[in-house]
Length: 234
Image (cartoon, rainbow, N blue to C red; front, side, top):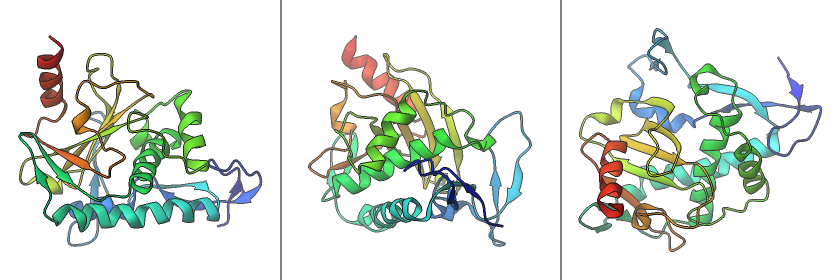
């Protein structure tokens, strides 16, 4: 059935809307069972449901859906190919080099924005407020902003976690930094809200040089970063 409405990205009115996966389908790959279903778990108050084909909603026109699709294609290469290439090891990070800053940063921004504009219950924890408009403008103008504009920290979780997927939930504030955390592809994704002037651990943030740090983690994600930052600031 065709659905017409306003595209949430370009704001064009009365246009045919496409089905958009809130989180791209390739992020679900490791959690599907042999029948191509996955268990949708997003709240302790809701019984897990078995479903297929991810979580989608009619939000964008065809042109905007294709624009985000191009970002997804590049991000899939980063997360499935580049992540396996030799990188730089530090005491607390594995760093993937030669990543296109603009394209991958826009992909990261798109994940946060999609979760914020979605009306699906799986993403009800993500309320961006005025930040929804700011991020939309970045995506619409294809301006990725600086490394500290809505940064994302990626943690490598312990072995066996690749089959775990958790929808976004608010994390405990870390010295004034707020945001949301999700688990996908064996990574814990920490989406930090706001445009910041500084960050106490800048080496864990994706930078303009195309260095994408994956923070070594013991599986606790935010607890690890909270402890690490506390040691710096105390």
